Image: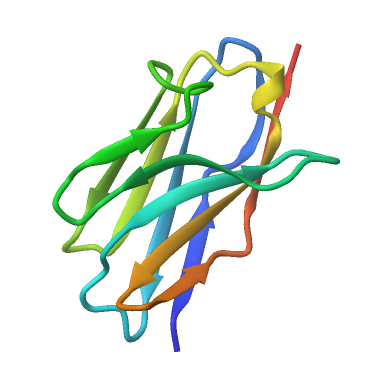
Length: 115
């Protein structure tokens, strides 16, 4: 059974920062892609940042230069450093991993950015 545990969400003022973490456990070796997605109220879930096992990274244009994704393969953990947060970054942030042909999602962590 695969489990993803996210942490680090919360309330922050515009211009502030947060760091999200997602630790995976279970039958997850090897993890291919790890990523962060978000869903704002009334909107569809969207990709925020994705990092491949080899280290290649893709960012949504809306977060590029503000957010940084990284991963620790020994700890099976993916991080999202979010700087210069904006009210429009308010959303539930979900972690997703791809193991072989399967993908797994975390339950989400709420990030609220006040103006």
